[in-house]
Amino acid sequence: MATLSFFVGVIGNIISVLLFLSPLGTFCRIVKHRTTEEFESFPYICTLLSSSLWTYYGVTKPGSLLVATINSFGVVVEIIFISLFLVFATPRVRAKTATLVAVLNVGFLAGVMLITGFLLHGDIKIEVIGFLSAGLNIVMYGSPLAAMKRVVSTKSVEYMPFLLSFFVFLNGGIWTFYAVLVKDVFLATDDDQDLPTRD
Image (cartoon, rainbow, N blue to C red; front, side):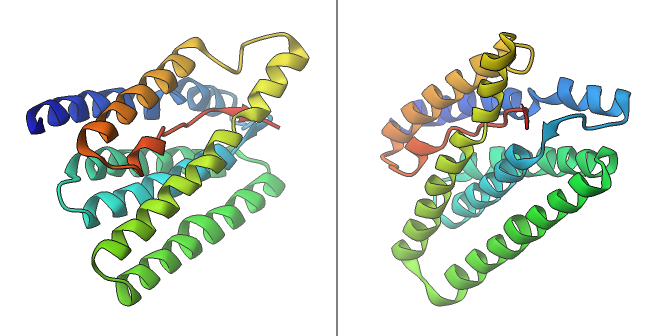
């Protein structure tokens, strides 16, 4: 069973790489036009926090190297995306984005790491980190709703590309299967979504 779970985890990592890189076209457009237009940074901030927590979970829980490696990659990708967003955003949007990054990706993450690192030990530490990581995915699931609203109001799927939706679907399926194989209830909720959305 370990061989099957490892194989499924590797496939999950490959799909997750494609998912993390799926907004590349959006950021090429931002760089080309030298503006973030009406794109929203919140999904990328949430994905950075989620990837950071899942990396911490993967490093903390024995046998979760595949979770740690893919989410470490996600952290790097999201830092690049958010940095580009900060460079090309208007001053008001830049200030809002920087504040969210400071509060969520620095403050909240540091708080979680300090509390779990110094006050919790063993299985309870792993469970708290897993619970927080899984809970954050609820916020991530809600962040693409702005894109769906735009799709309905404009009757255009320009901001909800097929490949992005396809990789979200595959990613959710493969990581749920992996979670069943390794009997990890927290991973069953981890569908790393990184959807470009507009206000």
